[in-house]
Length: 442
Image 1 (tube, rainbow, N blue to C red):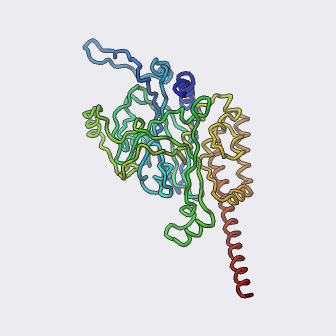
Image 2: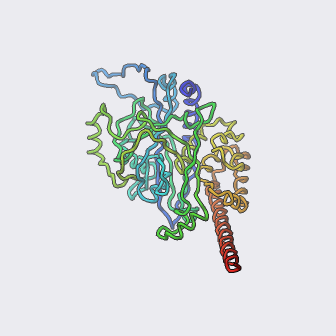
Image 3: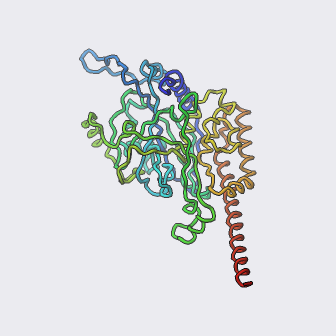
């Protein structure tokens, strides 16, 4: 079972990953003058102690009040007994939003109005005027959305993962730059939260996302998106139906996350310190209108959730940091790839998993074939990325390999779709001509 593996493997790998993130400068993508919009999310990690673990009595000062304990360093945190106790379980926080706020909100969540499945995402949102930077945005949005104050001493910022570009359908236009920030909960108990209506919290064991033999192995699935919703004008019903018939659907890789009552929370727990929550509200009022979620129907705890899109990519970025150095150099991160990932991606260590998460496959095989035909430049970028990693031992931080790969891939997709639509239109026209000729011949 994963619970037996975690004390000796997952906790140690998490420690390695967080130390690596803290010491590795992220790739920062500057916002162009034509599109200055930015956003940030918070990737929050905790170690859940075993239920039967006995904690020592808290230290007290001479006056009898709790003593002020200095904040722990990252190394000191992972040396604590309860962190390394048998049964301790590293977990990562995901949110399920009933209805993401608008088109951009759906893109940042990894969900949107064009799918009918339950998806999870990280707390976060758009940078607003007055924010002091991406880190401030992630902390503010987390407080506004779920009532979790990451400025408390119970949490420490670890560092930032690489920036990501959020684009329109098929990568034709940049919408904003997304910055993911990693936080670690230092205390064994999670502080009370107050999610906005329609938002549920899900603490997911990292072992459920890690490949065997370290973890339980991710349960891969797909998310189907109607291609017409991304390729045809929104208000043109006839054109949308035509594109739907000609192109079909787009399928993105996803990881299944089972939701359970023990892993989600949609309200303040009964034993929560309501006075402390009320005091925080008075000092920092919750501005629900800035959250990426509006109220909606009540969630169902028994349903299976899906992690996909940008949220899956950022999660795989984090998990790739947990790979041992020899596995990273030898392509060991390919174990994090979905089963149907392209062979080119399986050759690239470290960074390929997060790249594969945003590459769709189409429901019609001929569409995928033409994408491969026009994907020469895309494959050249992947090979250059591979050479950069293997030559230097780490990814070349001066080149935006992810952006280059996405740009060339979606260029191939656009060409393939044009060819597919033209070929199908020709066959339809020939079919009408042949049918008319047979009809008049009679």
